[in-house]
Length: 335
Image 1 (cartoon, rainbow, N blue to C red):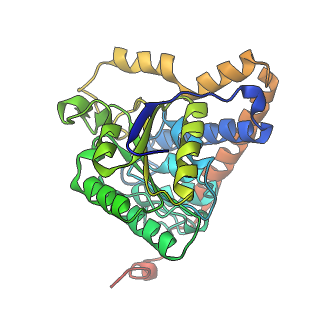
Image 2: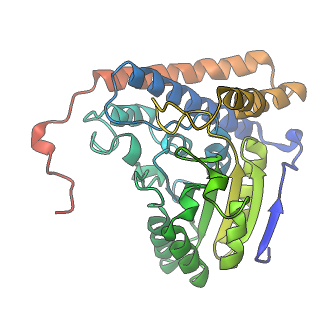
């Protein structure tokens, strides 16, 4: 794959050629993210969760498709909208929910919360409350992997708004010069907080910026898990072969507000509803597998019930877990 090369790519592998376990991973992972986020939204609005939460609803295909190409030894850096990435990377749902509730049993002992959730055991280095804060952390992780002569890679997720931050250009240049094993994944969801992206971004396709750093890039429908999986697979293979960084742009839509409680005065309800009806990644998956008779409605219902049980258990675990003790306030810090 010669750089620079930007191509719009759609799914090419026939459904019959997919391993059944892979298809189950796609559906169950997207369901876990959706149902986890719906539970978080409901309980936040009920006053049970402290702080702020930013939901990944409607973008499930991206985290799922990318992570299906990774192992626990690969690293990811996330954003303030990081629950979906964390779930897809394989973090324990009980400890995730407890963390969002600020409980002692959380994966960061209740100190990270929604925007700083992490699970090193599966290579999830952390969500990041600073917009654009993950690029250079991911570049550093990729540098370590290269110096240790590992075949593992790092992945950094970011939105279209974060691509305007200086840290993106610093990390992209550094990764290209050093040929680091780093995949840049832009979740182009059309809004940077409350700003429509074209009012503050110089290019319609964020991946055009890959040209400046001699990176190959692919553009996909971020709401089609098959397209994301196949495109990410090509780029991951390119990176693991020692060819340096690559860029994946996933066109999607943020169906929820910037944060739970956002009045969303910057867009119409009609626009949001249209995207919900026409671009839902879970419904698109169901439609395809049912049409091609890979699964029956009963098969899908069984997986849904399985995930419902996992989310219910996570919620119970979080609510019943103890609060952190005040004596732990100064532990686990740098200075």
